[in-house]
Length: 318
Image 1 (cartoon, rainbow, N blue to C red):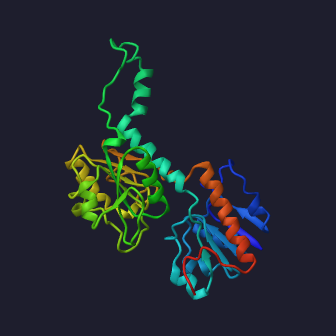
Image 2: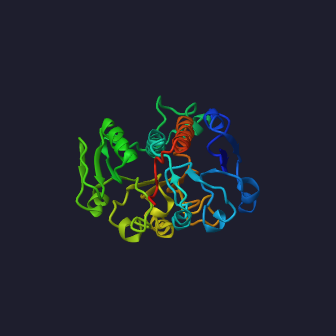
Image 3: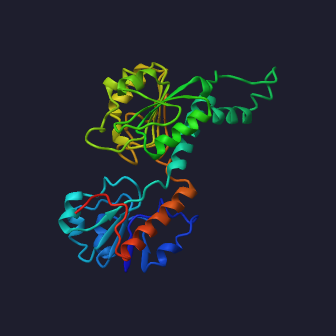
């Protein structure tokens, strides 16, 4: 089998073992692929691996031998389903590989806002503690996690793991999920509005769909507490970024922590860049070394199963 990974740079940075992919056949990974390079690089591919490269009807037209696609992610918005269905090309994703990595990023970012360790590291290096008359140099109020209510929207693997960690830190945990779920210690609210109004921290962990697109907007933001913290490590388009920008400007006590944006990388004039109460990381929540190794292992397992006649982790059915 001829296997081509179109855009593997963010997955394989030289710190993980991808021998499992080379063992499956003739394997070639490219850091990035421009649309004009697709035919040259993948015209003979039997199996295509893509992270963000868009697979649409135009792309499929130059891939005559293609038999199988693996998305090197859980989300598959880059796959035009009508196009692959027309060709009856099976498509799989990889699930559950980054759960603990994302949860770690949520709490790392939240604690950065609450405890401000980076700011204190900098201040100590600037000799402010050396010149302090007291044993303790404290310049900011510190809110303990145990005094806060965590609201989780979307209660899949990541949401449930986040709840587990929040509970272990003494937080009250609320959740809102369309499917009827139960979890010990978690209160499931009847409505989204109930969760938003009661939570000090709101974290988004649901897939992007027509229903969830821009679910955080002017209307829902006004339901939240004035000093609430909004966290998005899910999908950028879950938030109307223009309306969030206006809300942040009008409510300086409100904080946003974002690891994803609608356009990545963002343009220079993005409305959220530079706002003092908006903290943005460059889509790294998924990317721990362990998570990327598990991603590669999952890709290899999908391909191995396909070669044996099994289509696992299907994103659609024929």
